Image (cartoon, rainbow, N blue to C red; front, side):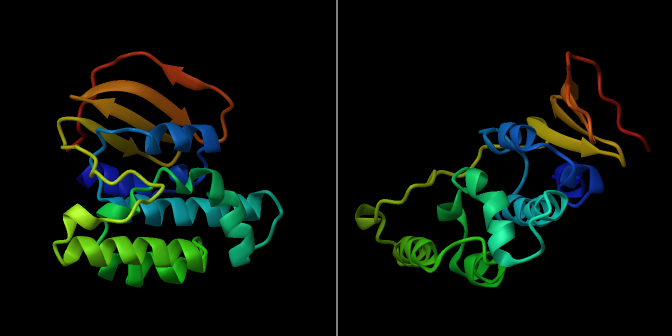
Length: 171
């Protein structure tokens, strides 16, 4: 998780295209907590809205994030995470917030048989550092599995370098 956390906070993460971010958020095997992925999406949406000239309003940020919000697994978050991180972001409507708060309340009370239907994945991602991870420097985001590079996303580039290459940690 160390590498993935750093990537989500990096400048190069903010420069990912929507398609590249989608490909990351679609991963089942990703070494990150869902609330961290949401925070990364929130930062990315703010940056994207500014780059597109939409301004820094909550509405502009939601406009940038909306195509990707369904990839965040809100049901695996706790009600505290939803209240402290998701709600103040302004990315979800009041109706969407009520929906995920209701789900969280049912889940936290142990009413698993009566969980309401939600339009989000309800199972946590199954990731560990030996599975899909993200690594970043100032100019690129690297998606890797078992220390083998799967793709490299260069900041500002219109193409994605694909292939495999051994990934070595710098000490």
